[in-house]
Image 1 (cartoon, one colour):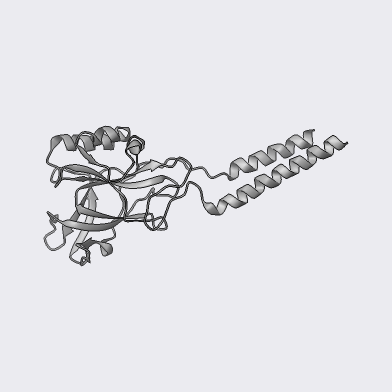
Image 2 (cartoon, one colour):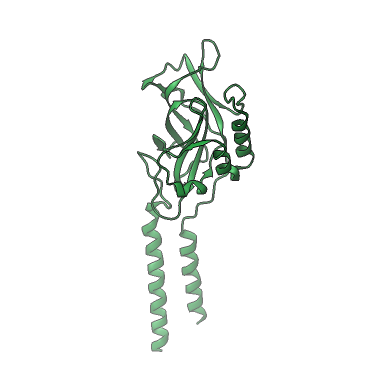
Length: 234
């Protein structure tokens, strides 16, 4: 009987340890922008003339005090995300409205700015911009990845679907009608398939691990069954 219990313990431990588990990542700042991949109106900009970056100062970008306060509140307490969004207009852009309350913050809200290298000044009134940037804590399996954007031009929060997600480089590519505060958010995966990228769909577990885990569990169960049968026959 002791031998049987030992086998059962080992089998259960192996199955539990091999099951993929995803911990909620810590919130980070947005990472480095790939200046060689910035597009304006579909045309690549000259990286020797234009650069880009994220900053946490909104004083020269966001005029409305209530929006600045909402962003500051969100960055201080990410649990206030929905409350901050509801402080002004929201365009959920195809996100299931029932999932709005489930949104989690992946990066802080920061101002996305293009800078003219010749003058050293921010480029104002830039339209139709595509940007690729690093998201340090981006991993597969989080769920439905979205880009949160506040349009200072149209006075609306947008929850955008990324143009592309690259998990190999931990980067996101996004098209913006205009530039202003940006963050990365997500709806946590509930265990099934999730959406997220036109080129890469995040999974709740690495599919390469599913078959090995299943095989170990099945074999362990078969071994226990054989031992129980032999014990009964004896």
